[in-house]
Length: 214
Image 1: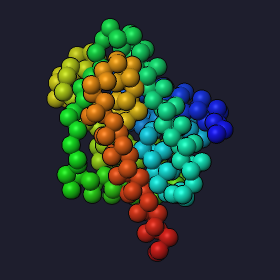
Image 2: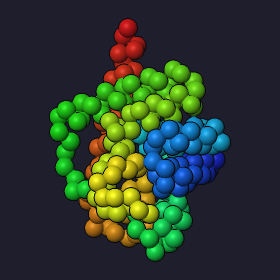
Image 3: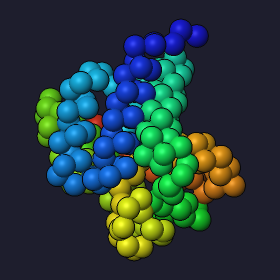
């Protein structure tokens, strides 16, 4: 198996920047969208967000094992970048991350449909607009529907109150579990990481098939 080291380095770097500057402080608002767009330009070819990688996986040739392995390695790179950012933001564990893992449960039917619809819309925008700025603002607009925004359960890094909304990505939460060695949370975080990505990816596939049929 040949690993594309340039792609891996781009994913690590891009995920580090976004995890540190967006999910570690500002959240996925207007400022977050600008940072994400800048990261996509700086790390050309990087997916940076797990939902983007899942969309690539499910809109490509589903029988292409090499492509799936390559995309899987991108997910690993994103987690590594997130781990490095979390170590920096939390001062190597001396400060708490702004969330705790929610107990995992299968999404309700309408929440699943919402994630699929968001994936379809995002992927059409991302692949047709040919602009990192438009793609980043699409992520900002659809973050909640794509499973990237949750209600905080604990006090955030500084003085944010419990109950505030925070933005994150699957790689960020996976990175937090690994960096903090809180593997008891893995049973909640890993299924969420997979199911959220699958739903958005399925939406991307549905949107692609509809576009072909029109």
